[in-house]
Length: 570
Image 1: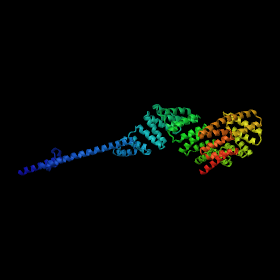
Image 2: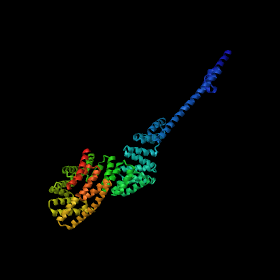
Image 3: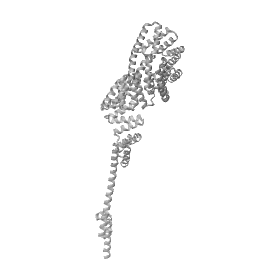
Image 4: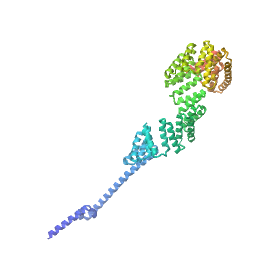
């Protein structure tokens, strides 16, 4: 009986220990055997509780730290982005995305950072992810479209920008950007519609006014373009492109003086941009202000030395100022830069012709013909070479070849007339000169005689005299007399400029006198002196030697020696 009771006691204890083992939380412990040792068991239980609580806190801190790091990297990235430190911003967003790849904002700003660094392919990948997470993000459609445009993926870029405008049609920049794309495709009328929409949203968007004007410029609607450029300038007075383009429009409308004012302002804003110097030079050239034109082309060439046209037109200015050697140097450079531009060969050929270097002139005229196949100009200029060499029969032969192609060319008839005068055929010489005059007045306004130099006009006078054409003789005589009066005024003006040290203006005055009277020895002397003062020794020497052909003068001999000594030193 006692044994049975003892056995039942043992079984009860085992059951209690098993219960404690499997349900420790109900007994403040986890090891059943500690129930036999109350003091020691309670200490172990408390330690285990503390360890579990400590582990929970550690896990909580790590979780909070991870969340904090995500926010910290994102926050740092945003600060760097807004400080334009895009490379550093990308590194922070890399870490933020690694921790939380499903947050679209992190992809947005990493993509924008790459976009700002012109890393368009990488930016597009980030924008793709943004649109995967938030497909209605209109700004990202726009930025992805612009990125594609920058990679010359024009069609794909256009689709994205269209999508952005469809989602949010109230952003003026997006209309303007799409207008620029359409402008690129030369669909100017359609581009204007988008620029109009951008202006409707933001009337002070000067870039849209400028681009709208530029579209009209390309459509050759210059007066309308000027109105748009003017509004752009009113909004932003120092917008270089609007000032330049308005000046360019005025240039095409032959409003050269007004164009110069715009180029003046454009140069003031950006003196390093050679285009304004060049077009101001062209405007001065068209106004026959050749010295001013040369100064402008000097600057244009300084800032844009590879533009052949600047060299060519500067050379043309020097040619018209009879600075032939300097002109040839400029034409040489223009030809070196772009040997396929026929007009550079033509102008150098004319310069050689003016200095009686007929063989070189012939080579240049032939080269021009090889480029542009202009048979009229080729035969006319070859005729002038033969005329200069006193071979008038061959000159007339080439003039007539040119006339078979261009029978209404007044200049060719005038030169046939001069060749026939040299051959003693006075009657037919007059008939050809009358035909030349008739064709001129049929095509042009102005004065027929103004198109010829003084030497040629004196020969015309002789033709009228030999044929007793009193009416035309008086008309030409009056024209020459008026020029002589103008010459006296211009010569006095030149002397005044010379004495005041305005040597460029003096050269201009004396050259105008010389054009009307190339035997005026006093004019030739002062022309040489003015060039000498400008240290243009080569052309000054030419003038002094020309004076020597007319008259002997000790002063001139000393001046010739001075020029020669300076040329040796240089």
